[in-house]
Image (cartoon, rainbow, N blue to C red; front, side, top):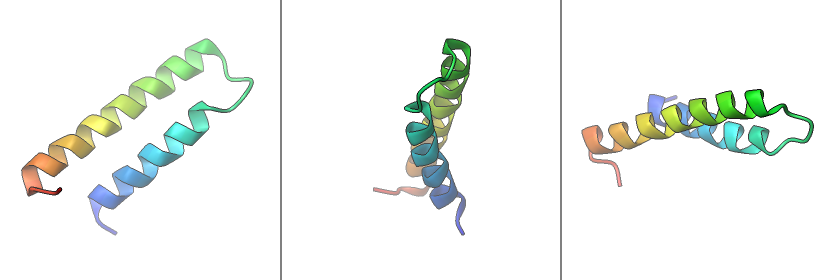
Length: 52
């Protein structure tokens, strides 16, 4: 499986996971930070490999 596809799977999993009930504010902030990093990685890969 290509790295780009793996990043998308992680992105979608984090987006779903963040919506769970009972998560602390600290956990949510950390998870949102990781999500932003993954989104940045995806954007960089799009630019680097000319993915549309």
